[in-house]
Every structure is written in structure tokens, then in C-alpha cells.
Amino acid sequence: MSPLLGFLAVIVLFTAILVAYLTKQFQNENSNYSTFNQMKTTNTKIKTIEKEKVVAETLNGRFAMLGLIAAVGAYLTTGQIIPGFV
Image 1: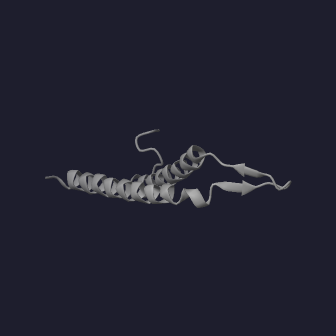
Image 2 (image 1 turned 45 degrees about the vertical axis):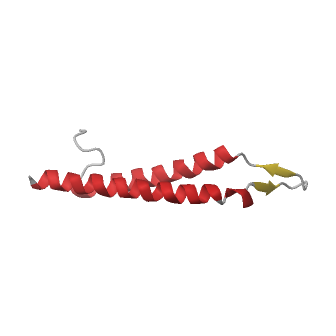
Image 3 (image 1 turned 135 degrees about the vertical axis):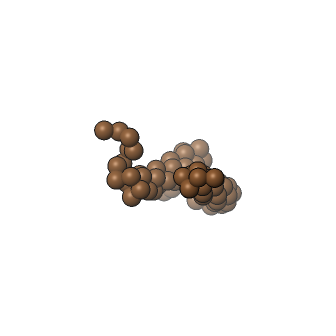
């Protein structure tokens, strides 16, 4: 096995482990959601935040951080943000 193939296999394995971990954390937060689903407004009315919106924003933030880590990794290894793009 070539060193590049071994490196890519390690990166793919690391990404799979990270996605599995984030999925588990996401499920735990989803089950704990019921205590944090209400927000008070200024006129003492209670506004209910939809569960799907909280889930979507949490997932969006996690994928954004994963993309940032990937961009830093690409820059450190190749010197370019988008490798091969001139």
C-alpha cells in the first residue's frame, strides 16, 4: 500500500469516527430538547421554538465547523484552500 493511500484511509476513518460521534451527540441533544423548547418574549407570552429548526441549526453549525477544519487541513497540507484550483 502506498503512503498516500494509507494517509487517505486514515483520513476517511477519522471522518467516519467523527461523524458517528457527532451523530450520537446529536441524538442525545435531541432527546434532551424537551426542557429547552420554549423562549419568553418581552410581553410575557411564551413562544415555542420548533424542534426541526433547532435540529437544523445545530446540524448546520456542526457541518460548518467540520468544513472549517477541512479547509485548515487542506491549507496546511497543500498550501491552498481549494487544492488544484488556480
